[in-house]
View 1 (cartoon, rainbow, N blue to C red):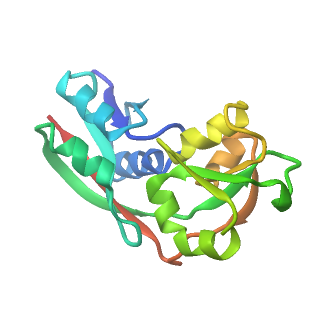
View 2 (view 1 turned 90 degrees about the horizontal axis):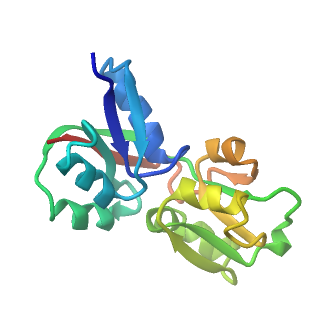
Length: 188
């Protein structure tokens, strides 16, 4: 029997990765492989080209609202929605080891993460540059590999700290204590 290929809009450790784990567990999909496709456009393109069986990506957050990237990509593709489901989203501020709060000049993350932590960022980091990236987990990976400057912090899931050798400077920094994102599981 063929393995199910689940394509997600994120890197290893992303919220989309967590959503895929939740979806496969709840739907008893045991024999599967995850394709880390980073963007929603890439997920839907791979679905169109029969490279993946299921696509999973975020559509709306309880605080950040509609995921514009998803709407733009969805407008270009034809697919069937298998399921709409939600997962809790807890953001962390991650840094390289040895970096102090005073060292941080830039905070990088996906647009949605920046939106979901907007009040926190204004209150605690008003003088810090904000930089949009394609994905929360990809930003964490880039920081760990030196592709982002050492004086950069990222907003990402806590699992990224362990995966990429980063330090959790603060946890639960999203503006809403109960922060949820709705995800779509789609097929051709």
